[in-house]
Image 1 (cartoon, rainbow, N blue to C red):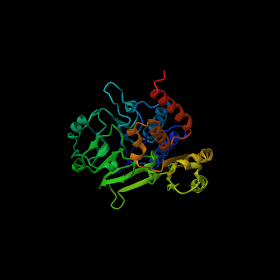
Image 2 (spheres, helix red, strand yellow; image 1 turned 45 degrees about the horizontal axis):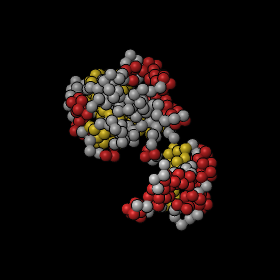
Image 3 (cartoon, one colour; image 1 turned 180 degrees about the vertical axis):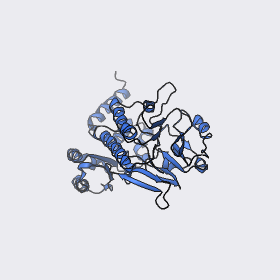
Image 4 (tube, rainbow, N blue to C red; image 1 turned 45 degrees about the vertical axis):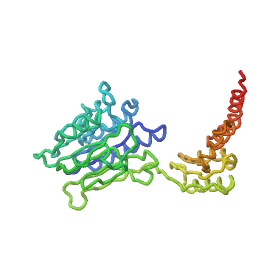
Length: 367
């Protein structure tokens, strides 16, 4: 008995080429799964990035699931995650469109469901409307003693472990105690990196990198072979867009030209045309920031698939920055405030002049 576990495909996320990356990685996963010919596929939530995907994204997902279920005749159980679950009772669930697809079993009704597919009893709780509902439904889960294999499917944060939080307002917590009820495997979704929680309890991770925090992690899906003694768990990698965090370029004590030269070399050394790259310029004095060649930085951005250059000004004591407020010198305080902020493509001098004119007029009671 072999199953495939994947999750967090987030179809519809991203813009333009990044959205296509995410769709392409899902298609690659489906093709590889069909090649492996498992007995069952589990999707642990967030197939879609939003409750109302575009028609294009729905059509794409439908095409892939038809290929898997109808043409390859491989069954798949899929639950809604916090991104694609309805947020209100009257809103329809996007997964409901798959309820009549051959060999596709969507679970989306904000309640616990248990059903059988072949030798497996599937116990699943999708993302629920409220945390109270989730707690109530989790209390109902139990394995089927008559089934050869029992599979648990959940989407959320393993209780008490901050590393698995994705900073989503709607994410829900799952107590680890539910993994000790006698299930043969627990398939988890929500955390985007392949991770073992305990033996036979896994996050599969996402099928494409979705944030810079995932830069160092491989993407793919899990194959579970219950009948193997040595390789019960195999992670199958999928090629995904490379993300790189470059070492920070330190600006203090250096000229703008020296900073630009280091930045340009660091980026070009990565062969950036097909990569997503992030780099910080740190400890930038105000006068150095003003001298930076932003036109060259913009040209460098065009050479990469995506280049995010972040500017971090030289830190100054807060008490010095705002001290003049206590003396009633708002004009000087505003000048220091504007000077301390890094705002690309903003005419600071024009803004400062307009603000100071207003302040002086207010002080003199001019109309």
